Figure 1 (cartoon, rainbow over the protein chains, first blue to last red):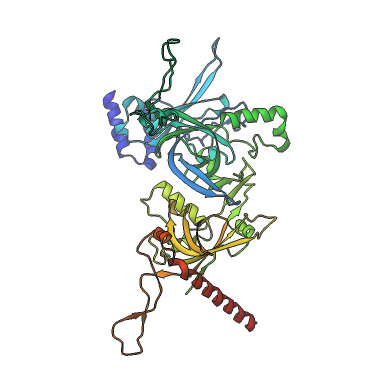
Figure 2 (cartoon, rainbow over the protein chains, first blue to last red):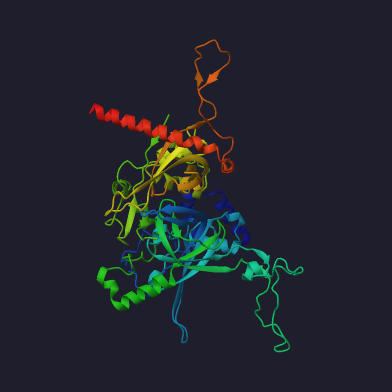
Length: 320
Length: 224
């Protein structure tokens, strides 16, 4: 099995993306797996694309943080934006777990982002990519979705998945700061610079009371490792999208360093809860908008095929 | 010796119409969006193929501004026609942004010596710092060049490393060069903050420029 996979990895080594499609199909047939056809080739009785409802949970996207820049709006306001690049984001698989007596049915979409050399990809993971008929990826993540948002393996996601004017939650490990003192880590004030303070200018001071309780409470804020943890920044506005470069311009800052992988998902509060609140009040029927300024969201996902018929660059009119 | 680089020749609303269009019909997911219609960037603005994605995007965004073709050659780091520190510039800016209801709000003009250019993000955050004596007080103002609030940047007099050669009428030996504003040997001229007498001549240069412009306008009026 390992030699067969080594052969596969050698095949991938010499592949370019354009030639991979024909070889993908031949590999699929030899392994007796149904060939993964491109998403455009639907079955004869294809159902129409589902519409987004406030109860729908679409897949998120894995993007690479490129850095920050600024845009200027018509009122002269400067808008700092973070550039997120959807670097060859493709669906690896979709899982469906049937309901049991205690849990409801669950569905999920597994995505990969950023190309990777087959030689450096672990054999087991490489087999997953071969099964899906896509090139190996650097990072693979899973997103929980509802049944109407399940995607076919091999689907390539585009920046058109997000609508300028909607909000997103962005999640990534924060930049690691190493072992840090309490002043940086917890914002403690420290002690005086002079007037008799000896050696403890940046220390935490007292850690508790006296004989009662006679111990330091668990969770006491102290010096230690700072950063490198998963941080979710909620409700960032998607200001602009560029489908040629597959890039999102998101207002505000995003955790992690440039080059880092970030999970971008429809905002739980400002999309999910907001849409449900609007629907219960009947606001969505007034203007035909599920959210303020957003008619609907691409379903089941914004793919590169969907982006072909739409403008290349789109930006939101929302004032800062 | 002055060159006028007009930032916006039309009113702001016309500018918006020129470079943006609301493609409501072609984008079904929202009607509160605009689609920028890009103009192809000038050859000097096209980044090399090895440039990073962010660099390419920043260059593309800067090129969408219609005044970028005139402003980038003025302030870019290696442009042969760049304005050197020590030059005298005049910046005209809006106090409030122009809108449909108020297309030409009041303007503010500030002239001064260019003491620094701050270049970031391929021109997105390009800012210049001008210093002048207002009364007896030194005043420095920083302008974000690509902000919609900055209307116009005029070069009153460029600083040069050495002036042009003059033909000597008499039997004097050696070369004589026309006196010009000497360009500083520094990128940032913060040392002028400690030299109160250095900027006293700037007001005269600006006044002379204004008189020249007035005379030109009078001549135009007389011709009509």
